Length: 280
Image (cartoon, rainbow, N blue to C red):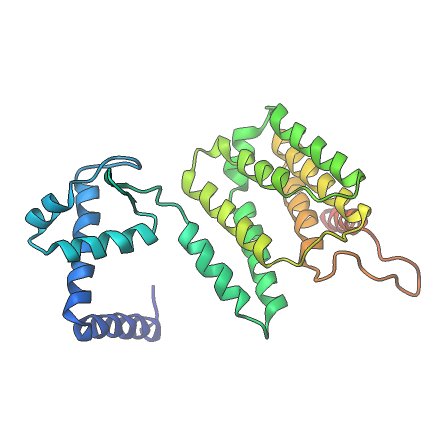
C-alpha cells in the first residue's frame, strides 16, 4: 500500500507530464500521437522484429496525419530501436533492444564527475542484484547439467589471465550463455546492458595484476560450479567474490604494513570461513 505522500508525489508527476503535453507545440503533439498510433498498430497486429510496417502513404491515410508527421514519428521510433527504416525498402519493426537505455545511462554516469566512484559502485550493485535475483531459477535449471561451452570460456579466461591479459569478450559471452537456461530474453538484455554500462564506466584494467586477473577467472569458475551443483550458498559467495574486486577503484591494492593485501580469492575464502562459523 502506497503512503499518502507517495501517492501525492506520483499524482504530481503525472500532472506535470500532462501539463507539458498540453503546452507542447502542435507539431510535437501530432508527432507523439503518431508514434503512439504506430506502436498501437504493432501491438494490434502482433508484429515481431523484422516484420514490415505499412508504407508512409498507408500510415498517412490510416492515421489521418501528414507525411511529415509520419516521417518524424518514424525517425523518433528508430532512435528508440522500435522501428528500423531502410532507404528504398520501407520501415520494419526494430530489435527493441535496450541500446538506447545503455547509451543514456553511460552518458548519465559519465557526467557524474563528483560522485564518479559512487556511480560505478551503483552500477556494480545493480549487476550483483540481478545475478542474485536469478539464483533460484538458474540453479534449478542448471543443477546436474554441465555446459562445455561455459567451461571453455572459463579456461580461455584462465589462459589469458596467466598471460596478464584481460578477457572482456569471454566475460560477456560467459554471462550471456549462463542465462540461456532461463529462456528470459528481457533478463538477458538487462544483464548485457548493465555489463556494457559497467565496461564503459569502469577504470581501465590493462595494468591489472596477474593475481587479480586469475582471481576473476576463478570467480567465474566458482559461479559455474555452484550452478551445476545447485548450491545456493556457494553461488551467492561466488557472486560476492566476483564483484568484490570490481568495487575497488584500484585493481591492485597497495601493500599494507603487515604485508600485501590479501587477494580477492583469499578475501572470499575469509568470508566463507566466517559464514561457516556463523552457521555453526
